[in-house]
Length: 375
Ligand code: BGC
Image (cartoon, rainbow, N blue to C red; front, side, top):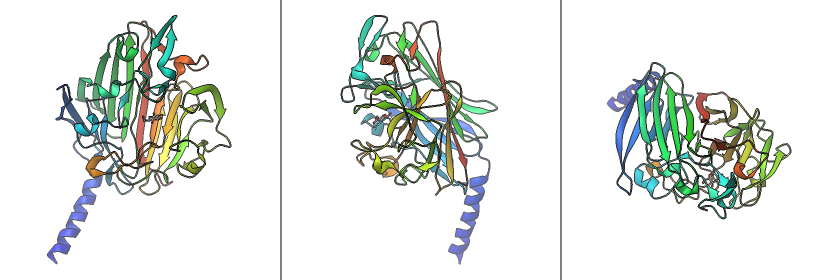
């Protein structure tokens, strides 16, 4: 009898807790040291609804993101590791800030103002996600960690030296993560300046699973992408320059469709989605994509200023990555929606330009908004 009473009481408490207002704030914790001995910190941003976002200074990585389901129950909806070692041992960009150039540059080469630049090739014949030691593998400086009357703000910065990973110019990047106190979203404002012309394309590479990071695959989650076209690519995922319509192909997500519905029709090894969508309108802040999980009721909306978004369905996850709490991340355990300029834009004249000049300021804003939906 006593056990039953205790159980009922805990259920009531749990439910009350799930809906109650939480004390909002930012907590800082040490998170270990890099192989070079640099200290890394973890920042825990908790908003008034109880949504928790954990971000570490190594790679500006979002390590955990706890969002409520339709019953108010929180689950961690991003893939990642429990500790710094898990990330230092190598991982497929879980939650990371990606730069100086997100996605691929063909053969790691481009010409700017008559000079040819050679980058490290780290993905087949191409350069991927900023090189061997991209912005995902450096320790970001914390400029600000504060709670305002509206939001929790964590501002990070990183100075990439002239010539780093083969890129010209000293590039100073600032990334501001902010979480509103009363709304479940993570806003990311990126800005950058340089002292020499250089390509810039910054993004965040979070892998989401709206059911929870350890809840199997994402194939039943329903995706809408606000794009009628995509950039056609070759076998090494370098755009051919052609912009193709999605209509009549398995890439068409103009209507909400389960991610797995047509995935079997895709070619490639391992097969799955890994392509850049051409968002409309190309300029300005707009809704780019929406994902809905029928099981939990969680809905994710992605808004961005960027002209493109890479939809990647976790094709290379193969169960070798032991994730948080021992979770095994198999193929399609998470999806990425990476707001970006188009891959290899630096070699494609008809794509929106990506060269930042010394007198200009690069900026991009992306918002990941969580809510509950009926369908
Ligand atoms: C790329 C994939 C790559 C993944 C992890 C995505 O942005 O498009 O091809 O496997 O990142 O590196």
